[in-house]
Image 1 (cartoon, rainbow, N blue to C red):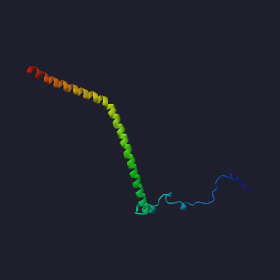
Image 2: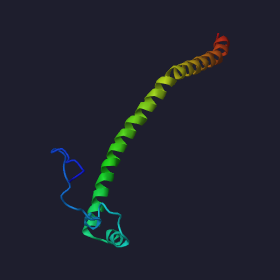
Image 3: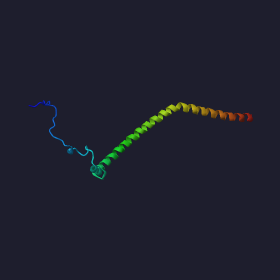
Image 4: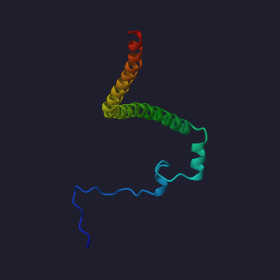
Length: 113
């Protein structure tokens, strides 16, 4: 007599016992030997290096583009913020320069009359 009820027919059932030794190295924690092999100049290490290099190139391009956009936005925002103050300062400097020039010319006009 079986006291455990049978599972419903749509529930998958384990039919094979999986031992830890059959798990691929990429999933298991690497052993010192595996680390030594990966640090050596093996085809897998070369592939990893090439993949890393290509990924870093792509990241660099995207990062450069996005940084350029971000910096451009920040600079534009600051220019828009500074524009009224810059206009006021330029206007003040021009007025002072014109006033000084006129003040220096007036005595010369009085002497030549």
